[in-house]
Image 1: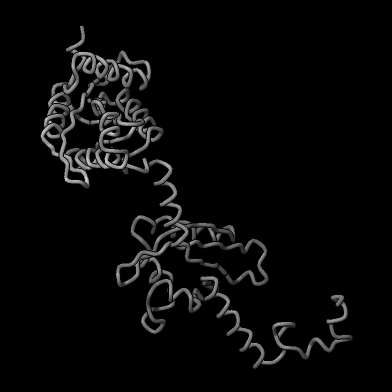
Image 2 (image 1 turned 90 degrees about the vertical axis):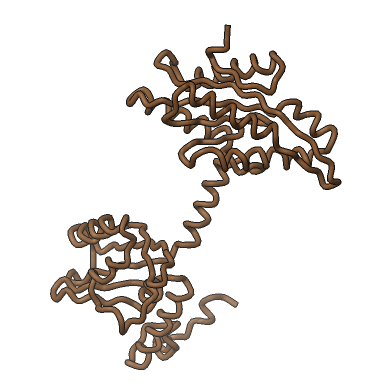
Length: 324
């Protein structure tokens, strides 16, 4: 059926439901308002209006849902709204509203904290640059909490090694580059520890790759327990791991690496068949120096120390002072 055949002739469409035409009676306007509220709830969209003449503010029902409060418990005032905005975002929100009154436009994302402690992300957009009523500001708000959670999850996955949960090579190199830049400005001591699980291929060949994966996971679990939150642990590939230590002297870095080596040497690893075995690691250590042209040279020196340790029998920690 052609579209024109389902459109009523003349002006009879005016008698249709408000869905098909503009409301003309108070009853239709009320039904229209209820329908809009339902649509806003389905889409998770709220809005507020502010009179520039009286300063009065109206918030839709969805805004109260966002705030987690009953409308009867909250005064229609932007100051009350700001009290529920995350402390780190309040200044940003106030500045955005001030800009909205000047320009008629805002586009901002921020967090609010509900009375029960839950945190929601809101996206507020307003464009009143050519308003029908210059005395009224109108702004929309949408709950983007799920979107932010997904965004955070994807960002984490992009920088995380799937098997061990440590940072991947790309992110570790990025953090190393940032640390080296900071070192050149501040002179803050830092060092890189480069660990390699000795004879890891024989672990896979003897016990299987599933057991080999568990070994790497347990090694990284020990790293997480021993190193500080400020330290950066990354898997460079295979059975090779790097650790970036901040505010540490060369001697202290060697001592920490040696402690890790001894802890792993003592640890008993178990298979599903209750077979137990031990592993060892070799570690190369390099500290930051002003002679390094780039962060890559620090990693290269740590790798040279690691190579020397593996060449000299493995299961040891080698620093640059050990190189001849």
